[in-house]
Amino acid sequence: MPESGIPASTARGRVARGPVSAVHYAPPPDHGLDVELYPAAELRRRVLSVAERGAERIDFLCLLYVSAGRYSHMVDFEIFDCAAGSVLALQPGQVHRFGNMRGWDGWTLVFRSELLRAGAASMPTDDLELFRDITELPAHVRLSGSAISSASTKPPTS
Image 1 (spheres, rainbow, N blue to C red):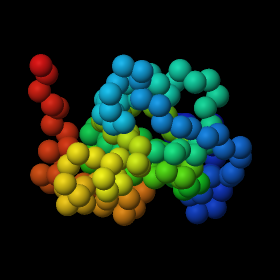
Image 2 (image 1 turned 45 degrees about the vertical axis):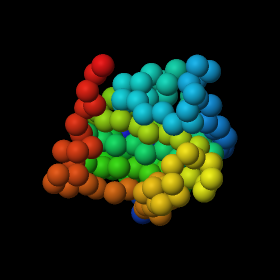
Image 3 (image 1 turned 135 degrees about the horizontal axis):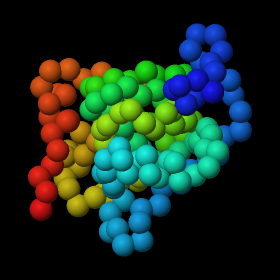
């Protein structure tokens, strides 16, 4: 397997297809929200705890932000090479596969798509438009300038 952690690709940067496992979002039992934000170290712990992890089809939204280092991730059988400032937007129903989980830092935001339905949240529907735009994102976006600074700022600890 190459250094990226993703099986060797076929022509044009696409990965050969194989079995795909369904992955359902389940927040921790003591977690009252259907939203989680955690650092890359926690994602690494979760991903590496499953032996022989392969291609997965998710039923939730996931934003993966790379703040430092390099990382490759397969989305819908296409490999995306990420560097600082990269955002991967994984949508429900997409197939993805984790690459080499070492050598990069960042954060992950996961949440159920039901959160975006009008009336499903206590905030005004207009305020949900920001989240609706997430479903319009391409699989890979490269941030620049002040957007990188904003996304890379660590939240204050309490």
